[in-house]
Image 1 (tube, rainbow, N blue to C red):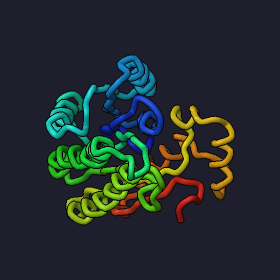
Image 2 (image 1 turned 90 degrees about the vertical axis):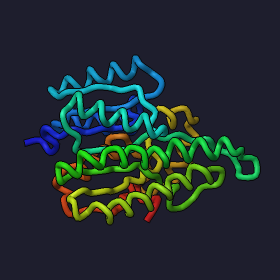
Image 3 (image 1 turned 180 degrees about the vertical axis):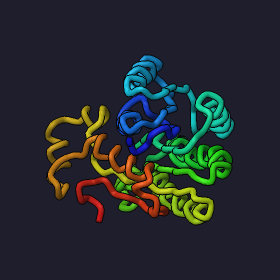
Length: 248
């Protein structure tokens, strides 16, 4: 039997990168997958087809998780279309980097709204069906930057540190209802965005990593499958680093 057979998962920001990798691994393990996207309708439809090829139900929704009303409407639509909701992966996120002395209020607010408030929005919206089921799983995407900080990323680091504190608080509040909440903190992961970096910069990154390579979206997705499945039935309130040893 597949690890996520007949579970319904919602993955935000899944049209590319880590979110896309998680959606595909979930479908491979038998989960029906709802996902959100903001920009590319074409990529969303392509992902729908790839997910459906695993014999599961799949649907993409154009939705902005940073808006509270949109998050509520999204969850209600997923419940209508799929009939249930067991797993939520809060993956949507952006960067607007810059040194603090030059960082604008807009750069700060947009990153906090998109990265951190979105996690509150989706979690709040999804609690009710999970309470009804007396089970559920939240997986929130943090970053090694959330624990260690990074020059030029005060806004991003603050949003990810906030996610980790939020994740642990939710675990304490909802554990008695059999609802688990964990976070994944990726390090340097090879995605479309990192692919735009020149080869020399990528080599320098790799040299700083004990495993001497960047991670893949599959590396992250495999941990997400573990956290979403009953393999981690006694794991909650944790931040799991997927970073090749960058953060210990």
